[in-house]
Image (cartoon, rainbow, N blue to C red):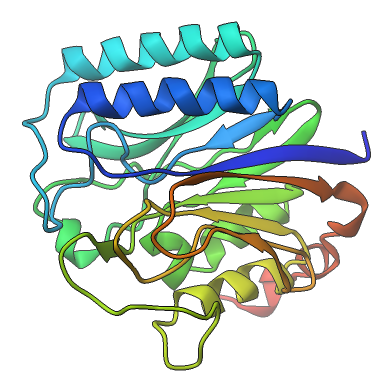
Length: 266
């Protein structure tokens, strides 16, 4: 395989889980029509990320299990893999995770958010594990929001193990207040898009970051090429399935391969 067609679901942030599931179904069928291999949804999309300026229903593991089962059915029906941001009850507390469901509707695994943002400490606990995933023979990693912005090690971990792309489910912005951005990568905008560039070019891999379609977004849903150039993005505030065919040959991982941890002893 020389290319991989990915989809990033820049979707609205509705009040109920049922509305969110209806959006998920629409996006998955749209992805199937466009022959997308894998779709990534924003951080904690089911049921929504706690600690922000919108209401999220109480934690309900039975509801989460039912949503995951519905998503498995959708993936199989559409023949499209999915990365879904969810919360999940772990042994130590509530986790912020991204589940990976393959084209057959089987659960490949989940990546928990390990570096929890200070504002999320009252709600979530770190998962403490990292793993690599695969779609159509292409290895990929996942880093979730804050850890991808502030902890480049979370991307390097996947890159040194052969990931050609790292997906980055995130939430930055609000439907109520915030900056009105008009130009991607504006020097006066928040730092997030600059961090996207770094995560790609410091490893020479693809980096795919997906945000909710807020009225006041602080970063755009974006695909970054291995040289750090923005390859495609969704205009701020717009709801869309961003489809981009990535050239796998460009993801050499050369800088990740040259990383020497022995040069940084404890």
